[in-house]
Amino acid sequence: MRLPRLRIGVFRAAILTAIGLILVVSCRKSIETSSVEKPVVESVKPAARSLLGATANLAAENQSGESGFLLLDRGDQAFAWRTRLADAAESSIDAQYFLWKNDEAGKIMMQRLIAAADRGVRVRVLVDDSMTESNPRYLATFGAHPNVSVRLYKPFGPKGKSLVMRWLDYASDLKVLNRRMHNKVFVVDGSYSIVGGRNIGNEYFEYIGPFCFRCRDLLAVGPVVESTAVGFDQYWNSDWTVPIEDVISSVPNSEKSRKAWDELVEFSTDRDHYPNGFFDLPANFETAWEAVKNQLYWGKARLLIDAVPPIKGQPENRLGFDQTGKTLLKIMNRSQSEVYIQSAYLILLDGGFDALRAANQRGVKVVLSTNSMASDNHLSAFVGYRKQRKEMIKAGAELFEMRPDDHSEEALFSPALLKKYDTKFGLHAKTMVFDGRYTFVGSFNVDPRSVNLNTEMGLLVDCQELAEAVAASIKNDIAPGNSWQLELTAKGEVNWVTRRDGKVTEDLKVEPMTTAAQRAAADLLIVVPDKSQL
Image (cartoon, rainbow, N blue to C red; front, top):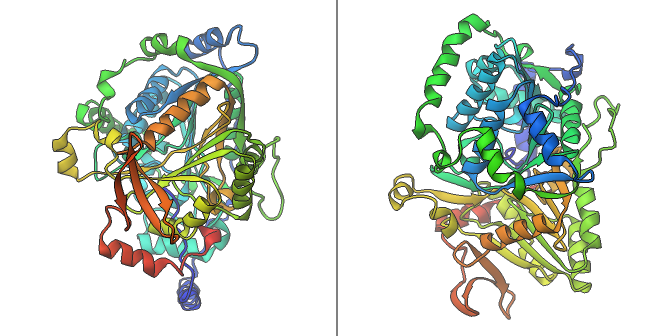
């Protein structure tokens, strides 16, 4: 899920003038975040005697300062580890997400965190405001517990308004439009963290439904977890964040909220509210950890995280943080053999094309995996990519687009369920593998918005075994039946090709599995998007 992309083109002046007139009449303003007083709160240090602290210390013992990682490659697995960690928490849970939806996944995770708070666990939840629900009851229910604190990043108007009025608030203060907080991290007891591309919502955990995302996370243990906790604090205590009680008009007390919490408990007992395959996995942390603790990938790791943007011209303490995209570009420019890049949205800036051409000249194999028109959930983003894909191929990249009927994804569900929901699969993973050694898993898409406008984060791990596992996962995603490979004809036109055993079994001339209406809509957009906003 992303911030809806700006479509600024021929009608820019008219649109902005109309908005300006409405804003003058309504006199609406965004919340002045830097003027909101709130306490500075820091992460809880790991407790060696707690269950999670003890297991984490034991796992990291004799690892020479390396961190351990579990690849969360499937939705049920990623969801299960979040619920297990929440159920096992004894001191703290810190959750930071771009999006926390009010659906099955969102409600179950909310229930798990409230249950932890009932046990005395301190819970902090930080969510970007660009995609929060307008329903104040949903947000207030979460933050009403005395042990739960909720803050919104760059809120742009009180909750409870109509969607139109909230977006007018948004447009009235363009400085909050960009540098949205796209970070995604889950830290429990200061001992375990999960970092990756998933928001909290059904489609990110491969729930069956109209749309289902292919995504990827890493569960981490060891020294790098402290970095994720420090990174969370950097944003939590930022001047850009506002406590939920300062955003909505009324926060019910815990007594009034108890009924809602009890309803969440009842909701969470229904097996139909969990992702497919969830109940085939161990239910509790100890059993699950015992099964995987000897299968962790160990390596030197670094958290890449963007510094909190400056406010009123004054940069905040960067704590050694950098722009995620710049670091990844440096690694790309040092690659020697092969690079795998999987990005839901793929739009290169000039430096990206320079890196691609330079890699080709060095003899580096570069594989790019992204969405097709049929699988992309943002048509304007796809149009920005479509303008570039011929140049990507000419620069030497092997380019693959995900099929909306990805066979590996379809195999997770029964034909009856796929037919019932008319499910379309899309790519949401943000993953890179360099030279079979360095792996990046995080929130960063290879596009101008991630490079310059959003804040991003991810884990960069030096471990050959993890790199091999992630590369194998990407290779499966681009295999015949899961993706099309794009090739150029002698006339320079794009073909979508499927090869099996070296033979071409499918060679398509038009955007596969799209309608004439979809293609016409894309053609209309081709002159509209401002690349810097994509």
